[in-house]
Image (cartoon, rainbow, N blue to C red; front, side, top):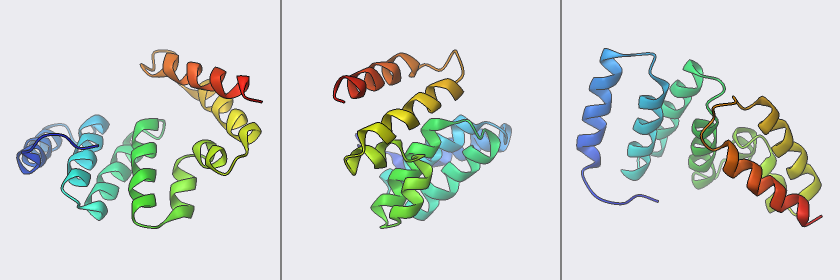
Length: 129
């Protein structure tokens, strides 16, 4: 969901940040978000892909790139980016979604800020079995 205005300015600022720190995955991810808000899906996917190239464990970039692919009709690409978890859930395969979520939490870095929320969602899924 995109709120506010000034996405062009955000793209300009983020592009400058990337020039200064070309290995800053977070800046590429935010650039992808800004481009997505500007309805530049291909540009958003390129930016998310760059973030993933820099940090292959950047789950947020995979998730957002998957969302862009889904919006463009690339369901298989979206499923690959979402590592199957959400896609399995949407298909009604809760057990597969739990397995994917469990594996994702095992791989997540200990300091990952969304780890607590991810664990809560996984617990909620497990209670629905």
